Length: 438
Image 1 (cartoon, rainbow, N blue to C red):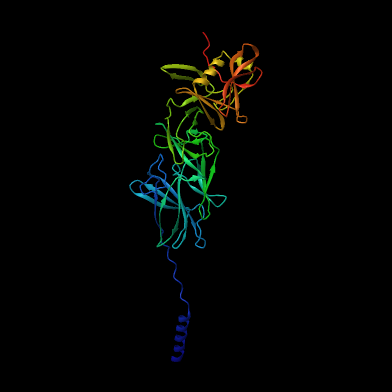
Image 2 (image 1 turned 90 degrees about the horizontal axis):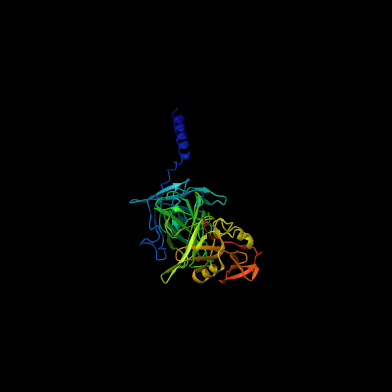
């Protein structure tokens, strides 16, 4: 019996010692700590190459930076739409929120890119067709960005982004500010100048550089105004091919009713990358209302004497905006409309305008033409973009030839003159405003 118990105990202990102990359950991974900062362009701690001319000068309460990660091959991956949100609180600095199941761990290495959208704090990120990180809105605004490498060490990601306004190719961003005490809605106004083109930031690509996916629109395409403090901020990228550097024509449209006011700068310091310019405030008389029924009086003071050069419609006959050619009429058809608040200019007045007023070549929404300006007011006369020339009827027929009449003729090479042509020719028409006799 004792032998039996001995063998039974021996078998029990032999079985117990040979059995593999279960592995302990893995504990929860340590929470990653983010110690990231971002230098605003113009900060005293910013690099010497950082831009200094921006309307906004520092981080403000509620600002959000989107941080995207790309891991070195072999250390995992961070797929869209995962990212880190850095949010700024005045007096407290940055807080960090992992979005859409962002998962990075001890030992991970790679590249991270920070993107700051001045008017996109409420944007979200989704997964794109190219596995990219797509912004919920493609903002037509300047933005700040920086890229740096990272390593998760001691469960911590640290670094300081040196944020800057990027160039798009060789072309850089500029900003325009229009004050308005009633500014409350983004996009309430749109601004255009052929010197600048909007660029939309669409997404961030999932490559090793986290390349920005940008979409540039044509020069002169409207820039939306974003509410900033008491006004609207418009921004876009300079067009290196702009032909009239130092001469700028701005067209501003109120979206709610389509009304438009234009502003002309005949001689200015040429725009440069990172420039910010304040334009006249909304409601300022320097903004000239334009449209088929709008008129403007041209005058110039010389030697103490103010001379008038007529009250002109701001658009050609049959056009809705100044840059449209409108109807091309023969002389008799143009004369037939005279009398109902419309008067063809005399050839003498056309010649006086050439001799006494300033002529500046420029384009508006891609249409070339000439701005004729007095001391404060101006009109834009468009020309054919295909031929680079244009004719405008006067109301003066040749005394010695009843089949001909005078007209204003100008070209893109700077030549402008009063000449004559057959009355059957089809020319553009710009009328003076005349109140019918009572």
